[in-house]
Image 1: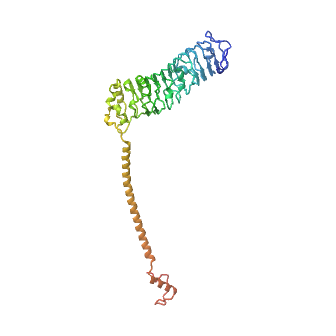
Image 2: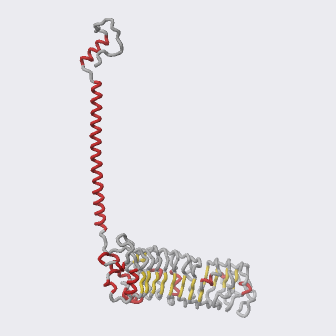
Image 3: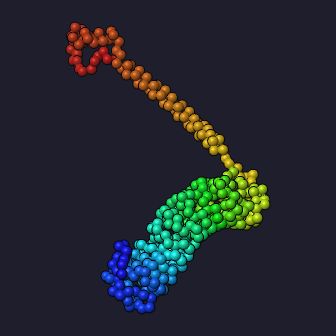
Length: 412
């Protein structure tokens, strides 16, 4: 049986067929390959004892499910199932392959693929090259650090629902969604993104539901994130119905980021809102006039709490618009600076005066000590002259028998 060079050795001494389970033979202790044999069930005589299998290649058959894979395949790292009749693959299906690294599911009839918490961090760009009917893909709870944008190119026509939640993805861009023009539902919970930049979601003109909950690092959503002012603005503005940013890190949100009149539900609670002029529009009654979902939105605003010092713990919906004013930070900083300068000036003046007093006191003490020293050292000239004569013996005292001692008789 001919084989593709990448398929490994041919594993059948007799041809595989769908009528018997005993015609396929394993080639080595690690590889099982049986391709293009119209198989609806796998050869159980090998797969019932899977402890040593590393590669399973069943491409181009008629497998409709994973029922043939009984038990667990503890060492399989490469599973090739392209061009079969699989319509749905779930987390439980792949749980049978705990060490799986490579997976090829380019299947014509695959409609739903659920690979939740499968430890995946990359998918080959060609994984869906033969897949034409896939409309639901769930890759949540894996280890993707970047959006696998290229895998969507072959499946963009039917792809309507995508879940990429709880992956350590640090950024999303417009290029990540450029092939998903027919997507209707997008779920991106619990990522590591910080900002949503202009036109990130602009290509998805048919998007109806966006779930961005629990992106705790997300602090900024650009007013043109959905391209409301782009070429397809009118179409997208009418399609987008449900959006949730609950539990994120938003301090403010631009009024024009959505077409509020088209919204049926918006999730805003659980964010650390700074209640100033940037969110004043939320408390303005005029904002919600002619908005069909205004009652739902108002209830959501009653659950959306302020975290700034002035309004900490107060719901946005409970604040009068007049209280939601921005502080002019330049004036605030100037006043702080002025008060700081005033306090500093007082301290400097007191310090200066103390220094002056210390200097004056030091000068006074120095002069006093100098006068005392001079009073001891300055002897009258006449006394000095007589002391010199006396020391030379030219002058005798009245008492010739006087015995001199060490004391200077002229000492004052």
